[in-house]
Length: 163
Image 1 (cartoon, rainbow, N blue to C red):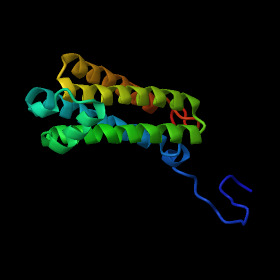
Image 2: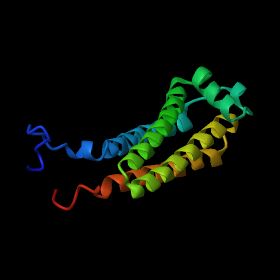
Image 3: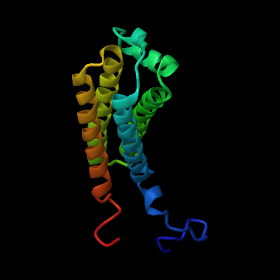
Image 4: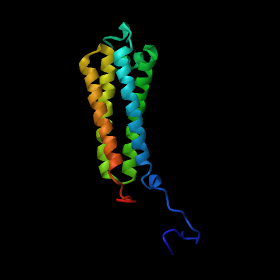
């Protein structure tokens, strides 16, 4: 019986590399694309958007709600995409654990923590427009982006040089 034969004698095709990694690489690539879009939106919001004065001095979750409900469209999209990045980060960690890829799980956890830091800094920025909050978002985004690029750059357990 060859590797591609099943118990009933039929032939099974080899799973494509993305399926063997349980979608881990595709998840990391989506996070990179989302982070780059988020980074551009964040710069635009910081430079050109006018955050409503009524949103200042609000707490974290109230500031997030105000950004989505009452902020400029770019700010609302930025806040929603930031929240989707949290979901993407959790999905990557789950995929890494299911694929028994400890390195990707640890690096994914770092990306998740960086995404939380960026999200909290963003909510703080809406609440007080502090330069430090904007800088915190940028640095945390860079850490998350680097983490996902590392996951994409390291061959998985079924991959190797030249495969």
